[in-house]
Length: 81
Image 1 (spheres, rainbow, N blue to C red):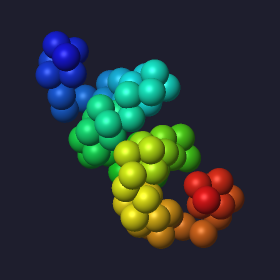
Image 2 (cartoon, rainbow, N blue to C red):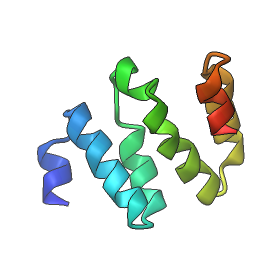
Image 3 (cartoon, helix red, strand yellow):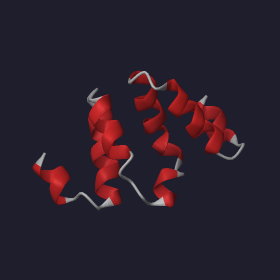
Image 4 (cartoon, rainbow, N blue to C red):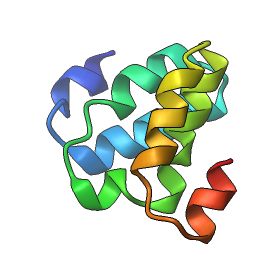
């Protein structure tokens, strides 16, 4: 937890930390960290589909669907489905 509070406003750190949490199966913690990310570039990145996965695993399918609707129609949005 020390790292999380120390790098609280660092979007790159939060992105990597959230991915690590999700990969380890800690989807609830990963979701909490993913939503801290402010950078539009990171939030719109294809690899940020991890947030959708976290929503689904945490039984928040509606939020995953809303994330999909925000994406432009492309191969990336299809991958999210």
